[in-house]
Image (tube, rainbow, N blue to C red; front, top):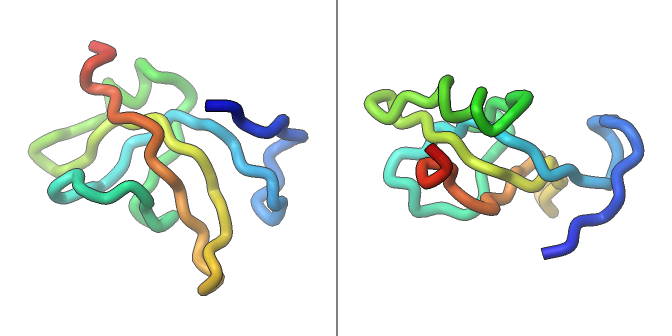
Length: 85
């Protein structure tokens, strides 16, 4: 999967980034998540360390944020990172 080149980290920009995150995801069945469910972290190892399955917070690689047609900022799941451990 190819991703567009990014220039800085401007939250108002239309350019989205591939990032590591910890996602609050009961059930883990969705492929997109609202900004308030996603905590961006520095690295894959940070995401894995900060995840707490009992609290339904899981490590992931995401693409975003992207603005939805309703005006919400969304992150799209690329992959769950449990297999990286």
